[in-house]
Length: 62
Length: 454
Image (cartoon, rainbow over all chains, first blue to last red; front, side, top):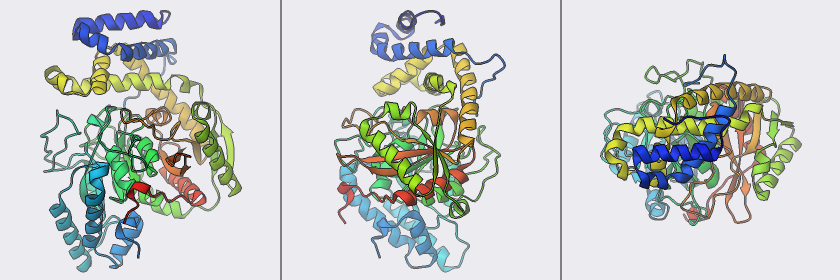
């Protein structure tokens, strides 16, 4: 499982995502989606660094 | 009288009601238009000419017998190829759904039919309403993208092959193609129009969209479809106002909040100038235009939107994808694969952030009649390998706020520009009234040169 460390870097998280992608999708697909995973890493990091107030609940259906 | 295909939806409905034209003549006019333009524009998946004319004949008979007529009586409407239509293929322009024939209509389709509309045909979408471009081209210049994912719906309306069409928006899939093609695009509040019977991209983001040539036409279609649907768990119980009455009842010029930060920093010079010009023209016409600032939560809205979209898209496609990954287009495939890798905790955090974002955006929108931004950072790109950038539309989808794009001019290269007005949740009445007021001030009636030949 991928772990998001809010103090980590985008590159570290991106590497972790690519490694996990290689495990479940194979090396070829992991390479094919490298750019998308780099974007995903940036998004995941941003979210983990800006968590809402602890009393904020999720909204699935707004 | 103008060619029948040149009439707006409202004009055509009025003409049928007054028996000045027949529904059959209107349908024939549009079918002739499609026959002429479709080989170039590639906006349609399915047109069943006989079914359309038969339905039109039935509508004419209903007029003759004095039956109570709905607001869309005899009006042919296009449906993006993700709306279930009983007995007609709904393929989502994909290999996966290539042979899928629904047994029931989407609620939105049912309600359009109840209002008297005729299904004119099924319009092209990008594959599963995501980012792999469709074959549809922009009628203003075929070398430029028509946008997506509601490419066929936007092009069909802009080129006057139909008076109104349904699209959908998960990022910017209604307002962006509408703006790129010089049409009006309305994304209502999340929960305002039922999603039941619409092939999903992302359940908590997907919103049914409306594409027309005028704000009044969009109001008419919204009025026909809005309202609670027990079959859609996200459907709202909020009261449905009379949108057409709201439009005609605007008493004084509106108060408009111009958002310069981010939007006017991220657009090209031509779009910035156009938006500033629009604000100035509205102000001169009497509107109160004041600058408003984005809330703090805006900074993370794209990240949370993207995470939610990827995870929900991966969840919907999981079963198909296990068996048929090679049948997906490259962009959708990578979206699904990325979504599979995103931790559940981060998905939940993103949904919590969206709720907070919606609260802050709603508060901002509630202080004015409508907010004003450009719809897109630039006109339609000269690149058929993209559907354009959703960056200016996605925040409104993620927050669930209603938004409408109206044409605001032409670029130097002759491509349409649009401005976007955004309102408070479930205040489409106020948003549409403001948009109509702006539409009158701006006075745009866009006909693509490629679709000009009569």
